[in-house]
Amino acid sequence: MVGGAEVKAWHESSPSPRGRGTGGGGSTRRKLLHATAALLATPFIARAQTAPRVVVVGGGFGGATAARFLRRADPHIDVVLVEPNAIFTACPFSNEVITGLRDFAAQRFDYRRIAATGVRVVQATATAIDPSHRSVTLGDNRLPYDRLILSPGVDLVWNALPGYDEAAAERMPHAWKAGEQTLLLHRQLEAMPDGGRVVISAPANPYRCPPGPYERASLIAWYLKTNKPRSKLILLDAKDIFSKQKLFQSAWKQLYPGLLEWVSLSDGGKVTRVDPATKTFETDFDSHKADVANVIPPQRAPAIAVAAGVADRTGWCPIDPVTFESKLQPGIHVIGDAAIAGGMPKSAFAANAQAKVCADAVAQLLAGKPPADPRLINTCYSLVAPGYGISVAGVYRPMNGQLTDIEGAGGVSPLDAPPALRTQEATYADAWFKTITGETFG
Ligand SMILES: Cc1cc2nc3c(=O)[nH]c(=O)nc-3n(C[C@H](O)[C@H](O)[C@H](O)COP(=O)(O)OP(=O)(O)OC[C@H]3O[C@@H](n4cnc5c(N)ncnc54)[C@H](O)[C@@H]3O)c2cc1C
Image (cartoon, helix red, strand yellow):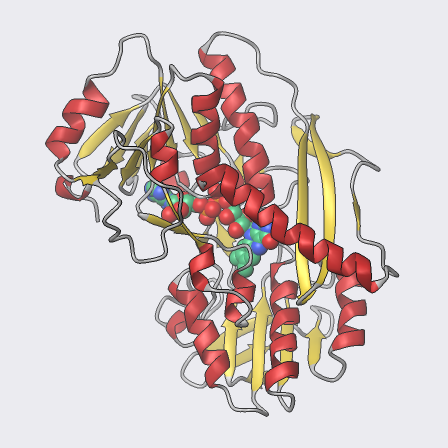
């Protein structure tokens, strides 16, 4: 809820020491200006006549990076970042939190360093967007913009899988938005007795983090093998083909035989209904009762994208691949998971790459110059076990109105790699996370 009094802005005057937020957002180092009147009087109305304003909605991997890189591209641009949470909780590496390999605190980042770069960070939810008047509604307030960047991530579509709604997620966690759900799944796994059964359901494409369900299954299998070896894991899938499939399946055969069972679409893996009371998954052919049930539900661009009129009938947002400007609403750019980015997957790596390209394009457009023809890179690392990493990489360019994979420019880890290479890839994954979160929040 965002009434006037709920809108908060980060205090920008005092440089803050480096560090990540680990608590619930109540840090004494953090200073918030609570009074909407004061906030409106200073940052929003008293802006230089000549300074164009870009509002960025969503302070995750795409939005926070875009805000930072816009300031870097042109420090004269008035950049306002709108995000409801004081602390961002990252999804990458959250599968390690679920399986006890990593501290939850290592996933959490605040906005002090971003505010210190001159970005105005406003703690609020964008509730509406008026493309014709170019304004974003924050509760009772309207925030005008010259250009808007939307990076709101994904919404989980409740009841798209019959039986799965918000209440069901309390018994059958999704853990597909990091935070309390991550901890809930972790606690359920810990509480499960040896000999228990874990069931995961993976959705059809497209969804956030294509290899994510398979990394999760791998690490849960590792957890069970290590701590509860009489247990079993079943991965019910609405697909026959998935990211890094050969690498995952070869590792499963080697590391988790008899423990991890993948049920493809063709073999009846598509879940048609869940019953949270009994933690049961129904498919066309079978019924699977779980001790720990993890439902990864269908997803779409969030409500704010729909409200802005930038989502099409697919539920996602078509964009121009050079500028990320919406194909449906001029002046609004969409990046990250919410965008239809051609061959690029919905990943934090991709959101970060898109944010930089979009920030540069927006700065150019505001300066009346043509945007550059971009090249974007994505790499998705996955851990199959601690110290066992695999990856898939791609390079993309605008072609025929889409971001298209440049053939031969990317690749996947070799299938027959020695253990040393797997260890090296796990190290690269760790380094990637440190780099991207440092670049975005650090
Ligand atoms: C288990 C798991 C593992 C993953 N592992 C990896 C990995 O190893 N590598 C990788 O590259 N990617 C990984 N991902 C994917 C990655 O997390 C997402 O692709 C990435 O977060 C997308 O960035 P984004 O900016 O689009 O959305 P987000 O990072 O989710 O940010 C969206 C932000 O928008 C805010 N927001 C939403 N609506 C509003 C509104 N109305 N007003 C204001 N703010 C709003 C939200 O609060 C949120 O902070 C993983 C995902 C999962 C679930």
